[in-house]
Image (cartoon, rainbow, N blue to C red):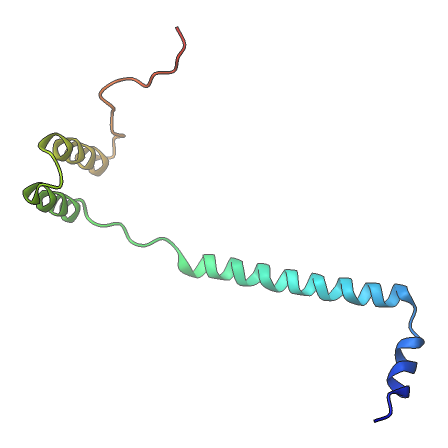
Amino acid sequence: MNLEPALLLFAERSPVDLTLAVLAMIAALAAGSAAVWWLGRRLKGKPPAEAPERQLARYQKLLREGALSQEEFNRIRQSLELTHSGQPPRSAEPPNSGIK
């Protein structure tokens, strides 16, 4: 196998040409991977939210099974009711900021 024509092809190129070709290939790979990443995020989207009634039924089942205490269930139910009404849930105590 005669490699002389291939060697002559590379011998005629300057190091700047080779550097530019490598940089162009790296840029093309980066642009392609960014496009794949963006398209994947775009197609994935957010899953639809579960209805508050179904969430409450799931927590009631956990309460019956003993996985939740009555206090935890009441807190969750109140949070779901406030979220469903559009109001932000209030915490029982203000956060401790450490400022006096």
